[in-house]
Length: 78
Image 1 (cartoon, rainbow, N blue to C red):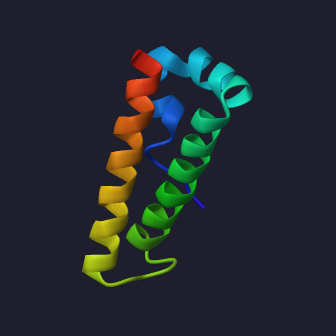
Image 2: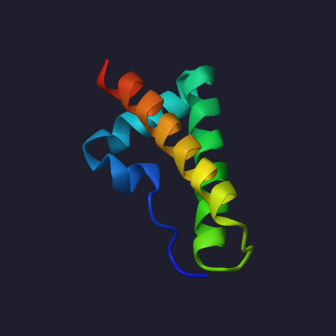
């Protein structure tokens, strides 16, 4: 499979070191990052038609990914 877009280190390259650190030291951040990864993978699989889904379900996943990304950014920039 091709490289999955929207990985956290690609989205926030300026925070790559902090992402790694927080995944190990902050359980809340680690949970958010894992949830983001899982949702991002679902979106990617839907987009590439590996696991097609209806447009509404895919849009809801995209919204969930955006909310998680916003939450993660708030923690990174705090």
